[in-house]
Length: 115
Image 1: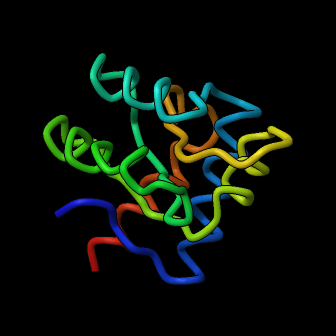
Image 2: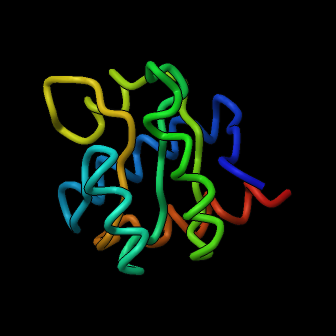
Image 3: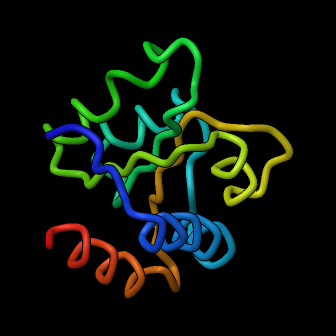
């Protein structure tokens, strides 16, 4: 299965989830933190950037996310992902570990992504 490619409409929702979770819940930024969150079973949803170089940096994330039944979404831009996560630099991946007020947004995203 791997990372779920999202439409433009759902892409905005992925960034919104990261922003809302950052403000009202808890997120982990960066590949190492994301990997640990998935392995510990604390990640609720994961986003990885497609434009990360080399791609090997995040290549393992969709695989372990699938093993742990964590939805993993692919977004085009590490800069936009970093901005959504509230950091000045791009990031290869973000894991939402506490949804906060993003809980319903995540439910909505997952139901639309399955269609």
